Structures are given as structure tokens and as C-alpha cells.
Image (tube, rainbow, N blue to C red; front, side, top):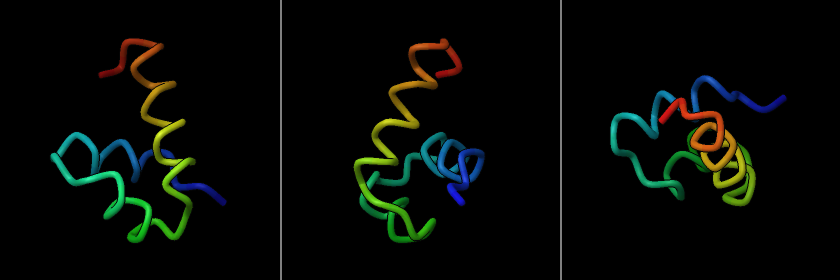
Length: 44
């Protein structure tokens, strides 16, 4: 299961998307999509 909150938390700390993908055990594409959706909803 994707850890959406963890992805956004790490992203807000300035961690690279590649490192987030490794840490959360998901693809870089998933990380990118989660961040893009959060920006679209104006959470970032």
C-alpha cells in the first residue's frame, strides 16, 4: 500500500523523489504522481 503521507512528509523536508521512492518502497512514478496531485490540490 502506498504511504501517501510519508511521501508528502519527506518531500516537504526537501528529500529527493528518488530517495523517497526507495524509502517508501514504491516507484519514482508513484512519488511524482502523489506530489503532482498534492500540488494540484494546493497542499504544496
